[in-house]
Amino acid sequence: MVSLVIDIFLLALLVLIAVMVVRTGRLYAVIVMSGAYSLTSAAIFVNLDAVDVAFTEAAVGAGISTVLFLAAMAYIPADEKPSQNRNFLAGVICIGAGALLLVAVMDLPFLGDAMAPVHQHVAPRYLAESGSALHIPNVVTTVLASYRGFDTLGETIVVFTAGLGVLMLLAGTTRTKRVKTDNRKIAAKTAKPNSAKPKSGPKTARTKA
Image (cartoon, rainbow, N blue to C red):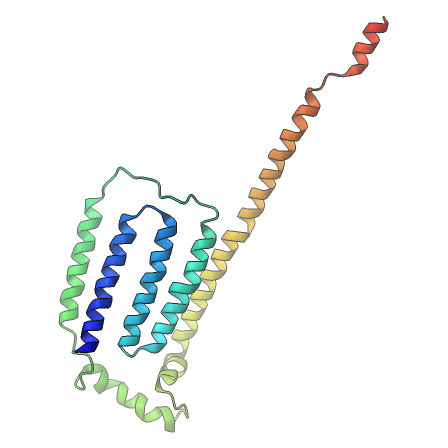
């Protein structure tokens, strides 16, 4: 009962944070609330005994993503550009998709149900082979590193590639071109006063003449 109350509270907090993200126009506030959203999701995963997923969500969602977003704020305005267009179709699609997800969740087995399909199909094999066949005492490590090893490797490559791409955008050729453009502008402004000065040679010759 206590776990259910905690889940309901955290879910309501997620909805509140999502509404605040949609309503605000300040990008710094959006970044901070996105980090809070990830931390709240990590708390929900911890309450569901999925500590490994909670750790990943906290590290990537609240940690790395927040740092990258804050670094990107150095190149964009602090406030969102106001828009006069109201896309009601997108809102209807989002509400419909949310309703379908709620209906699908109601058809799922109860949490911890021993007769759930996942506990009748692969879970007994993982529990039986983790220590004897693979010699790994932690079943979660067995699933992530052995049975789903290629999947975990692919996820790691995707996260690494995404982070590398963001770093290249923030400190790569775009920044170099911007610095070169600024240097050219500064050089042009500095050269204009020098070129505007009158030459003293012809005036001196005319005076002597």
